[in-house]
Length: 256
Image (cartoon, rainbow, N blue to C red; front, side):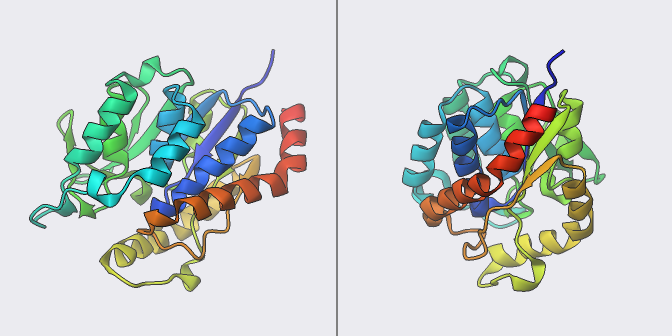
């Protein structure tokens, strides 16, 4: 029986756009992707691709989507960004479809704010699950869904390798876009929040990397978490990182 190859895509805000470059390289080299697990930006890129949206379309969106189109500033009681525009865009792109109907099996991670529980979505509305997974505390308003108050999955599972295996993957290709916590560039409140999450997750992330069959780490050190205007640079970093490990990756796929 053919074993399944899974793709685990980490959180990373703007740095997570590197996932697009990795996906493009995997596709160009005919690397099979049998399931995808994502957290935060990994859930957005992975979820859209799993839903059947061509990677070139996802790339085009990332290069042309200005902040004005997706940022809706609210009174900062629970978050600076309401997130309604993001959800509207996600609903449109996914045609408001269910996770269980994606073309590639998909799952994503969010965090229940009141309990700290790791919430996994393998079924339900795809757009809403992604909206929950990307809800960086303090930046996005928490998302109320199915009786839960949900924030970014990176708080509990930044690189969802175990979810990827739960989706049926025998071998997991992990893409980690986190930067070294000692080398972060802190310029605004967004950076402060994301860096704080990086520090909290550092030790757990090390374990997730070790659980992967192959690890791809794009060099996105020069991109701060909110620099979405550097999409092209992030995508290129993803391509380069994937190309570097391609021989080892192909061997893992052959042996899996």
